[in-house]
Length: 277
Image (tube, rainbow, N blue to C red):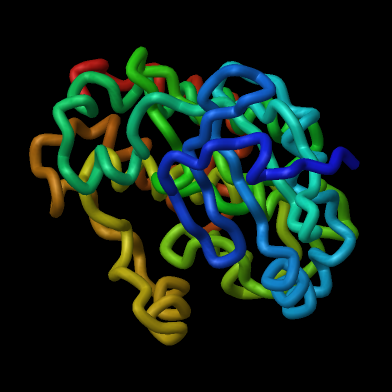
């Protein structure tokens, strides 16, 4: 693995994000002569996380996964290496745009007339990722960027795992709480449909500015989702047409056999909805 001298190679301009195990910077790459995004993972925090979730201990490193992904709707990783302190580093394209979470939270006019388009692109990214044999496991608006040309980019593959029995057996709940599929909450075996449920919740939120269930402030609230039907989207947005309501409720159904079975099926269904949204 390439050794990267962060201080020598990069001018760290400003921090663009921080997770529980990493920091993300906008940086000037002196070697490439361009502005990039640099993600620095904390090796100690990563090790502690993997100790809590043994099923993830043998998963491929995020950087290794990302270097093998090449799709127009997935942020491109240019280099994967390790700092002199032993922290994994990803050098990525800098996306000039906004997080989907910001667009939703601010009710941005950029969403108007673009919801179907953005979600179709996100489904394309998932279709590709699943075709490569991986589950993202943390689909949510925070992990989606929309650039100035309205191109969607899926980001953050820190929880990504191979879609194999070894990694999909019953285990701990990992992901963003309000987007966790019921099978994850129940701690049963999982498959690619956990991503489709999270995509469905993301779609529901984009269309209604709300969540299908009460926000999960506690484990008890999260578990209560198992026995509560999702809210009718029209309770949050009365002007939605019947076909869009039907689509959203199917996307977040608790029975994985009743929701969309593939990202391609999701994409084909959403493209039939009115483009006015």
